[in-house]
Image 1: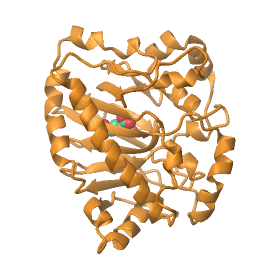
Image 2: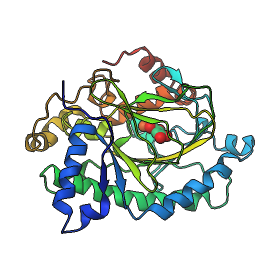
Image 3: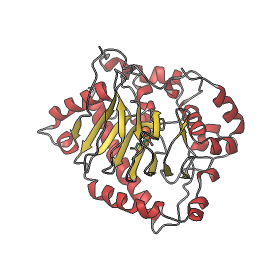
Image 4: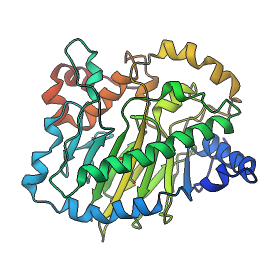
Length: 348
Ligand SMILES: O=C(O)CCC(=O)C(=O)O
Ligand SMILES: [Fe+2]
């Protein structure tokens, strides 16, 4: 039986950054990265920001339907904006959630001569809710900072120079506000998936529960709420950079039954232009430095990684494929040919 896990470990950010405790905490981080691919990050210093943001979500989602419609994702070839309940698909099933997607502001406008996948980086659509732009931009600035420091610490825990992964960072990260309304027992909040926007995810969940992660024996392990923590997981970009050694972890949310659940995932972006071939060269020194793991982290039951598939020309195309199939209405409107092509393909 491969080495696996039955609970998600906790790593203390203050200990990771304090000279007296750093090496012990880096060892914990290393285990969390190699064995689990999921961890609680506590004492991040963002607790007040997170709780302030969480507390404004009920009113934001209570906006009238017309206000949400105005910033609907259907208007955005960058897949940014509002998604109504029932418009999103994961693992070929409808997800029971509503959400607002945002990106790092200030992306340069897409032009005809740019690669087609570059269009993923674009302008936000802000809802007409007081100071929503300030709230989103403030949150992104602070959490990008934390994420950057975290990536440096991950490099250190793998015995690599702290800036090893800097060259892989993308222009645009993504932030979502998500609402899961009460639903019938065992409904799909979001189906089994590996995050595909970048390197690592930093998720704030409220006190409802329902998040689960798949271990290597194919068992779903609960990730119960821990107040003030961020749940951090490996995305497909980091998996690809580490030659699959640090695997993206499959997770899902079981919809709540008696109360609404809110969450705020932040997806640290990866460079979209990287091809698998370039990656083989640029990442080979990284892969050599990382001790090989027991079984390449293949789970007994799993979903495939677009980023490791030779079907896609680069990370940008792999991510675009994921967006098009997750938001088929937006995909059909802006990328009809790609929608037709990707929906035929079977990913292994
Ligand atoms: O809402 C959550 O807790 C997780 C959401 C998630 O996994 C995602 O949107 O990628
Ligand atoms: Fe996810």
